[in-house]
Amino acid sequence: MSFVGNLNIFLDTDDNCVRNAAVKASSEVSVEKLFIGKTAEEVFELIPILFSLCPDSQSAAAKLALYEASGQDTKETLKDCVWQNYLEIINEGVRFFLLQLAPEAFRKRHIHRIVEIRAQVSELKKVDPRDSEKVKQEKRKLADLALPLLLADFGEDWEQDLLNGFTDETSEDIPSIFAALNSHRNLGWCRLPLLKKTPRVLLEDVKEKKLWMSKGHKFDIKHLTGAVARQRKDPLISYLLAQDGNTAYTRLCARFVELITTLMDDFPSEISASVLKLEDKCALSVIQNSRGVLFHFAKLEEKKGKTVIADYGILTPTELNVTDSHAFNDSLKDISGQSEDELKKLVYLVVSSYDPCVQINIEVNKNA
Image (cartoon, rainbow, N blue to C red; front, side, top):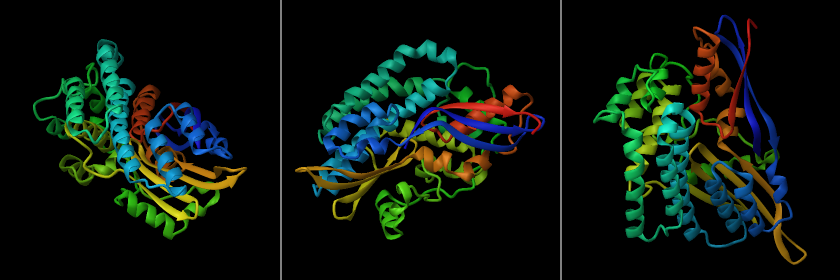
């Protein structure tokens, strides 16, 4: 499934306080239907065109599922997929903080550096992850470009700064993103438990419970996924989860911690992807991408002398964490502001902490 247009958030309010919330995408397109009858190579060409956000993890998940379903050895493919996904987490994190959430004045002031950072990520995509020296060299270039910009307005201990919080919402820097929520740290609390299963265990669980056999291969794993789940053992995020809970502030901090530590690390320390054969010519892959867990289901058949796709399914983090989640709607309730503009700003930050893969549009129905 792919979402086209805006993600519309409908708020019923009373005195600028949210009493009820609903979410609906402007348009939903079953991109999987476009894959039916096509070969794997044709699908690989289509995916970058269809997915403007997270194209690398989408391509990686497709390769794993289709290669496994066709009986190919996916060991080396898995290494490449983990590397591409690792770089995408950086690229999407840079886009999220430096382009989506950063103040406009900050973006204008640093746009050339931001372009340089994203260009360096593109250079790293060309590097073979098995070439450790080349990886280290190009990764250092990326870190030298990105870290000074991301941490420029923090103190020497940036994690302590996040714990203490910022107060100046008017500053034209990255800390202002966190300052906007500093006095509202309880906002956006999500009741879902965090996903703790590894990709492999998650696939085995889906196979054992036969969840992949549901209509459209859509299922609910009943856990929140994404950076906050992956960073739950980080000292800062662990403390915030214990002190404030799984709130919008905690989730934004987790995303920032993941971006900074990923830039500092030489190579991904955890396997972020896996694939599992379900039955003959049928496989399911999962990737822990920047927004959460992404599933691709593939079933092949022989037709007119070619191996083509008989059935396909995609389950995205936006579906799992946002559009199909009652917990997401509940996390918007009782948010209040001094004005409608402030209310919309706070709701926008809470929704952004889940990082749906489409633009956000907020509509308010007053005195509902």
